[in-house]
Length: 344
Ligand code: NCD
Ligand code: ZN
Image (cartoon, rainbow, N blue to C red; front, side, top):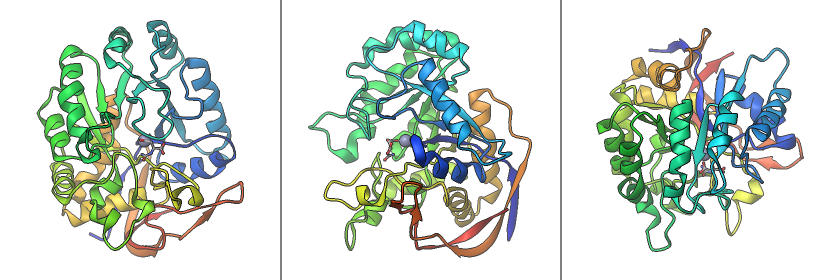
């Protein structure tokens, strides 16, 4: 197959950031995605409906003229979140709330220290029909970084999924065989997003021949058996798995540093790279479900009306992009040739 047309996709997990950079990040995503679930880990985080609506307006204002792109907003759960915050969020059209265990990732210091304290909030979310999005990693010092996702499943996730059978939960950016198996085997109230980097790469791509800061993200890339498990599960076409790029921009000097930030800025290459993966798997017929159907269905939103076309054609992702503030950023796969191209 040399070209593929699918219903317009959505990105069910990304980071736009705030301020000037929105002029870069929003159009980059809107070039192919109709909607995106916008992560709330700003500094300070987006913790209530008013902040989320104000942030939504700033995102809308950064769209190009006539853009139909629609940001879907998310609350950041903290130890202070109340059931009243959830009700207000529901009334404001906010679709989900995000659970970051404290210290799990970029700007998560405000996050939750004791998950059990949030049970009344989960109850309110379940009633209001807000989805719970989870960064599923424990943060205990003694747990190895490569084992943190599995430990989270064992210590918390199994219990949350059982305790709240009517709460829809998205296990975000899964990276392991155990996570893929857990989601596949669990009830219909749990699904998962998968990033392009975790389908394309494994920890060798981070560490062999030198440290590759632009492949560093959280959860960190795992060994190849995990990458293979993720590839296998998307090739099944299971409706429990859908597209979430986790596009997470950090300026070049913040990544190429003695303590580099986690995050891959994939907005310029994600849909093409997913297509490449499904092509490698001989599963191009499963791309549309993953990119355009399963997420909308799980969120209870309408599928998009438009279409996009990708053609099999080599092109090189730019090595750098200049941000509105004059600082460069390195896009994911920058300088590399990829084999599918979005037709404009
Ligand atoms: C994200 C970021 O930079 O905000 N980083 C990342 O590596 N994915 C945070 C996150 O989603 O964990
Ligand atoms: Zn993220």
